[in-house]
Amino acid sequence: MAAVKSKGNKSTERAFRMFLVRNAVAGFHLNYKALPGTPDFYFPEHQLAIFIDGCFWHGCPTCGHVPKTRQAWWRNKLQNNHQRDVRKTALLEGMGIKVVRLWEHDLKDTAYLTLVLRSLGL
Ligand SMILES: [Zn+2]
Image 1 (cartoon, rainbow, N blue to C red):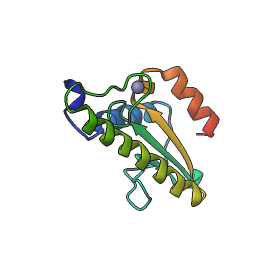
Image 2 (image 1 turned 90 degrees about the vertical axis):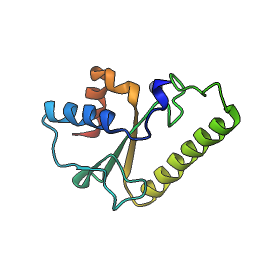
Image 3 (image 1 turned 45 degrees about the horizontal axis):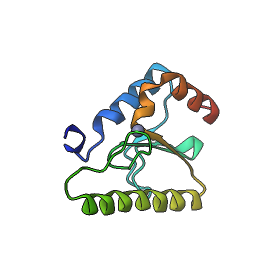
Image 4 (image 1 turned 120 degrees about the vertical axis):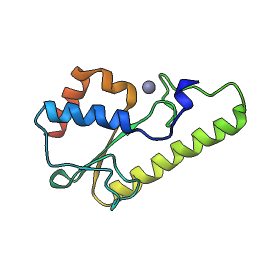
């Protein structure tokens, strides 16, 4: 099961970072540990945090799935991940930070990503 090989999201982060670079967007920190949830991308001038959520680990409704073995365990695990995402988002928003969550599969749709950047004023 290729989707279950790693918890890291280095390749998705790199893909989005390259997209930002191609669009001449600067002024962000990567894996900003000073904030709850360690946002993948943090733009201090915009008070904006962007997370790139892996479709498997974060339970994407479009392409996420529960592995066939140990289903109850996985269901619980993925649900906990989701609840943690919701909690961290609420914490950040409570600090006045705008939170945007993109799915891993969104990275294939550069037209959509471009719209997101425009809507955020980046
Ligand atoms: Zn997905």
